[in-house]
Each structure stands twice: as structure tokens, then as C-alpha cells.
Length: 97
Figure 1 (tube, helix red, strand yellow):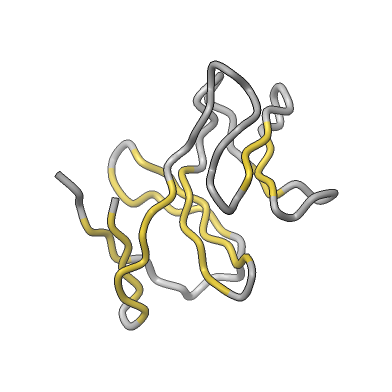
Figure 2 (cartoon, rainbow, N blue to C red):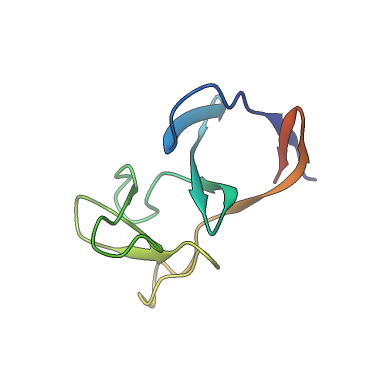
């Protein structure tokens, strides 16, 4: 069952936000849209960051594992995907996932 989360967009993008007791996301702008994506690397728990060399990627600072922002997939065979939350409202800003 999907849950809905309200996020205040009162900080400079990108920023990190806890949306539940065990879910932290990164809120960022990509292709003129606000995206909300799981921020914890599934490999070792590093906080994913926007790759400064390729702004369409999130990268783990621990091992360099990369995830494409458009579809949240990785080229790694074991850790293939992270969650992207679906934006269901802009005012207030609400995501579902």
C-alpha cells in the first residue's frame, strides 16, 4: 500500500528530507521538474548526492555506485534500482510511494 507524504519546498534545492521514521529522500530539480528520490544507497547506506560531473546521476560517496535520475536504475547487477516517489500535488507538494 502506498503512503502519501507532504514536503515543504522552503529550502534550496537539492535538499534532504526525512519523510518517515526510516525514509530519507533527496528533493531536487531535474529537467525543470521537482523529483523526490530515495537518498540512501542500497549497497552500504551512503547518502546519495547529485553527481557534479553528470547532473543526471546520483552517486554514492562510499563506493561510487551511480543511479540514473530519470529511471533510478544502476548499471550494477546487484543494486539495480532505488525508489522514485510520484508527485501527486504541487500545492501543497505531496508525493506518493
